[in-house]
Length: 146
Image (cartoon, rainbow, N blue to C red):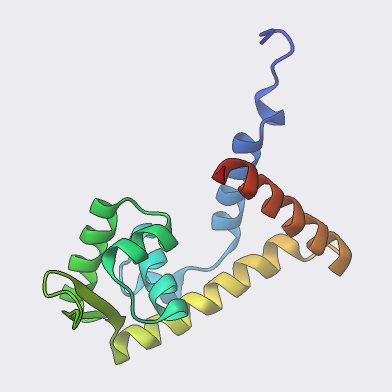
């Protein structure tokens, strides 16, 4: 690649990172900060709340975490009383993970935060532009999943 033609601000990863940081600065996280979650724990709760009971491997894949990150998040969240784990009836070596009642309340807070973040980021787009944007994200995801 010609380094003179390279423009960092024109790369997808740079733009996505910049957008994520701007969204983080514009959203009120006070509801979530009271329970002191890191990003992996937040994604773990969001995924478990959305999909229901999962194994650690399923959780890691759906939350886009590696297995060790997912395991650390689970240990922390079990300690906080947000997740419960029980032995899998089909495989004694595996565990099923699910949100506790307290975890369901945190999940509700996280969903509210996700909705707020999306509203802030997408407020100036028309419904058609939103549809186009998410269609383009889907195409990019397919390119990277092959």
